[in-house]
Figure (cartoon, rainbow, N blue to C red):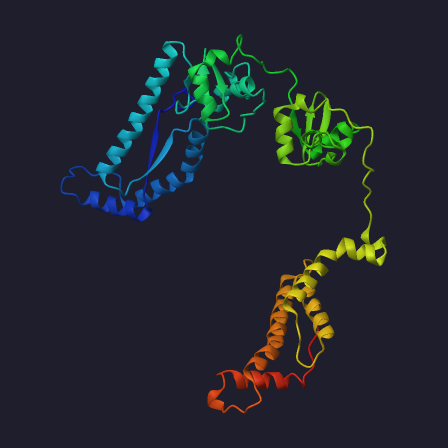
Length: 399
């Protein structure tokens, strides 16, 4: 069909398990209404099923990608349900085609979604705005690239040309007054120079071309009211080529803003005073205090904060040593460079350490000067007392 340029309006695939196919084949062979023998024995059905499974993925993906006219229905449903579902799909397709023809006959814009238009045909018939949304360019003066939209859900035809829209709102506006957004009455035409994202490999190939704006992000600088504090170095992963210059952006959001309105940021002048250049420095070459501040400050602060909240007091250790042991366990339990096994090991030790610290508070709340008979004691009192006394004869395992 493809070689003869025949495009099916709809292709409906009925899915069944192999077991169900054989069961139905057996039922057909033994049906009293059958008069002539057919080639549907069990071995022949196996051959047909094997051929179907071997070829269906390629055929299905072709029509889903090129024409989006492939529908899958479960054949184990009733024949009345299948009949109604197929009729519903065909009615929707006919309504879409009739609406498109009625709009085209009177010279209005019409959506081409559901008309089996291939991506190559759409690309060849794009209007003067190419993959950019004419409505966004006219109303917001923004370049909205719609090349990512391959379903053509927001694509319309006007004067035998195709126009891609940014969304449903823009599509509705275009369908009502298409003449306002295309030449010659469009307020803004597509500029000759367009921005595009470039990868790290492409940037390397452009060497020795340097980054414009000294490598700072022009979008974040403009958003920060052009203050000195808003000068932020861009990322090598977010580079845009525009007007033969490379601009480095801070993140995805600022890059998207630049791609939509590059003329708003590319001519922004740099301030006279610039931040000092950032120089990579090995933290191991810093003094001890500087190394700790750069490498382990956050971990130590988290451990000390947790220690101050818990206020550990281990049996037979003073408060100072108890705090040191708690901080040590906490650092080992949350060390990001350790293995998960090691972190889990010290998490368990930290929990056990905290349980032993709670023994003092528990025994203090449940003991008084008068002797209490065993039936009047809490059910776990004796166990916790034995555990507390046993800690005196066994040193605390630090490692």
